[in-house]
Amino acid sequence: MGKWIKSYLVFTGTGSRVVLFLLAPLATAAIQALWGILMNTGIFGNFADWGLMIGLSLAAGVMMQAEVVMDNWVFGGIALKGGVGLKYLQTSVKGRGVIRNALRCDMLRMLAECAAALCLGAAAGALAGGDFKELLRTGNGTKIVFLVIMILDEYVAAAGIKLITRHFGSLHFNTGMAGLGCLVLFSVAALAVLTPYFVLAVLVGGAVLISVLGLRKIMNRVEESYYDR
Image (cartoon, rainbow, N blue to C red):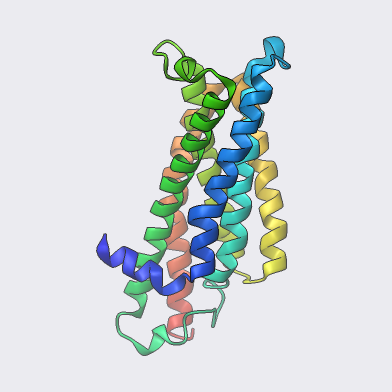
């Protein structure tokens, strides 16, 4: 794990760390806190599940934007021949290992951060809305299921979009694709209100698939660039 973190830090700067580790999580917490207050007014009535999912989706959308846009400064164009960060790594026999470890760490970090940010936001929203005990109550499984769904939804959508944007390395392209990722995220969230457990099962499989095949796809392109094929 230590090697993964060291390799990941090769690609990241102070600015990207501040945005990803501080500003984006705080923004998700603020959004869900405000939404929790709104939910407590009873504005959604019998459609509380929709209100909950909208709040989670808005918070996850912020993380989505941060992940995809900031990736332009971290791994932007890494799957493009001659992409950023590859030239100086090609001078080292350990270069490919550094890239592989950094990509693995990024996936693990993204999943952990999705979970931490949305759970923090959910707790903030529950406290602000005055129903923290309700959130933790054993029999209240729906909210917990929705939270897990949104964590996986954000991870799968962000990982899938980043798999595409890393073949281009353009900030404008990343920004546009981040918007597309949000649409995908919101669509899955809406479907989850109707069939939560089916969506949860699909997302679990999708998370495993995108993690394994995504890393393999990027590393294949890196190998081609590394050997100038």
